[in-house]
Image 1 (cartoon, rainbow, N blue to C red):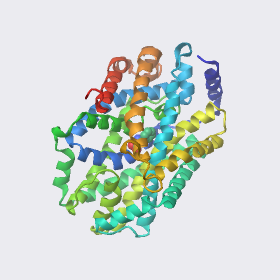
Image 2: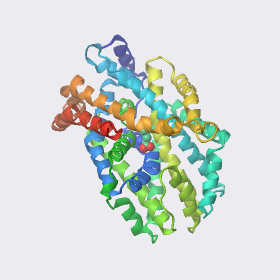
Image 3: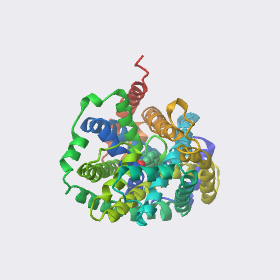
Length: 464
Ligand code: PHE
């Protein structure tokens, strides 16, 4: 155990450290992290575009064999150490082995994700404002495409909205873990479910229902290529917020009595429900009004406004849809930004406000790179991808899986089954020891190999 690590752990134990105050708070914050743009902006279009049920199956397998064990592992590490990812791994690593590098890589990944994520949330916020003002509705997709282009190709609007979003998230983080993250997600998550169920219920009364369900769920096996498998696994990482320190950080705020595996399973199931509900809210409407389901940002920002324009009450529905998306994204953004804030606060000894401000400051450059990737920097396309697309690809398909491999190896080989089982069973008071043994075996032998294979085949390493 390093001197510094134990010093920080002691000062944390002395009561200066924030945390979630109740089981409900733990659940709201953790679910708030998992639920985000991934459910609304990635899941439906990726599933539709990559072969429906086949993709869903691979996504589910990745979630069960890779995602859940890693999520449980990360939360357990965090709660054992009660510290940010870098300090936690320093503290738990045997004989000063450099496992803390996982935390450092996670912090880098957090900055990368924040850079592009905040820009998509920026569009969402801009659309909330427009929808409320009634300026979005047009049943002509050419028109809705033009208004989306006008937004993303305008460098000033792109940057200003990004900073509105970052300022808001930073502001909530300034309030702390309990009064900021927990209080906000506790209020927002129920609202999210309510809006989603209402939208979904409405959408499923539309005539395009059958076509939508078959688009989402009919398996088209020939679409499953190695690259698609990597995409599905990347989505599993992105969805469960794993492989980059978020779950470790939140785990460090878990209450001692919280049943970690049960919480992880609940969060995974609730998150999956949100994804499926989002798909069932979006596609019936799309098909009912004769649109082709498009992928990626155009589905949410171009097709949806055109579709809703044709529905009775479309104005209200559209505002509800973007408010829902903004809510989902807020909880996720809080959890990504909390990783660098916790590290800077605890390891570098900055106050929380200073740590938050420094995080925002560091974000300015990569954030602007993504924000301007369709305007001022549109011509910067190394390897055919914009900076925005690179940030998205590198984080989900490289950094998070690589972090996942390292975390699995750490728990399986370095930290060890006994400590892991003690965390999962709350020092023997819960009957999770058998589960801990199985998970430890998975983390030791299966999870890392599986991730590596999917990464290498997906990246085409075996193709030549
Ligand atoms: N899980 C979030 C989503 O689906 C994204 C996220 C990634 C959050 C990594 C935290 C950490 O939108």
